[in-house]
Length: 364
Image 1 (cartoon, rainbow, N blue to C red):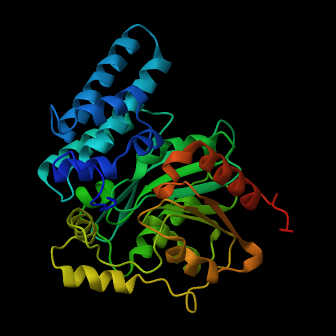
Image 2: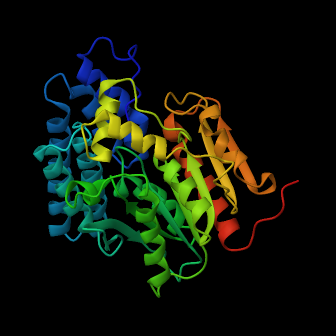
């Protein structure tokens, strides 16, 4: 989601400046882009080429690297290049706030490239309402000790969080990267949007984990950015959730003031009617007096997050048992802690391991 900060990137045209604010270097790296590609994208987008074209060219270059590596028997290099290509295509589609044909095509390409990462990544699909919810399952080397379901918010979804999945599978946890209602192919291909009952859609991923004989143990959920609101609601409503991480989410969502952010939210709800968007946001308000979180909660916050203040997230803490709630704040942390990604992923990976496998100890 864009920051809407009018003071950033004044030397660039407004649209390009907004894209640079929404997709800074730290976010590009956090979501798996090659560092050299990220620098090229930020240096060239809006100068020589539109953002989406510059990102797509970087993806094409990585896919050619993958083809040549595979031809020469270098499968590890080929897989890594495909992951870089998938990340570049993820950010290419983010240039479009609304669901244009170009956005759908770029996201379909991203999905196809990610599908080629088998067996490291497995596509899953779940019938829901009149469409299909999608996601990506990543398994550890041995039998999973537990499973964590991870989803994003308004603009970054699914395989954008492959680096998170890497951290979890390295710890013996299975990781399901969800594209819930209003996200990814669930929205762009199947027309599933966010409404007041959006947690029903995310609960279907819990159903999938329970039904898969390969996945045993407890189930944790993690919501990133706006998706943290959905995670908190699901943790409060579904006793199958054994632990929840909320990272950079507002407890009381509102229609944003800035145009690009408003367009993102309207696209997630599936309507240009801002009154309906406001109605949905009001229906998703998290009320700690009614919504009680009975499983362990880890709340993450960045002190430099322009989208979610600490006060915005306090209701989640008020809904939890103080003895089972943990807060971690990085004073210099950006939105969802892009700039502390490795430490963040290690912290949440260890925290889920402790709380889902019975290794946690009471807080002093």
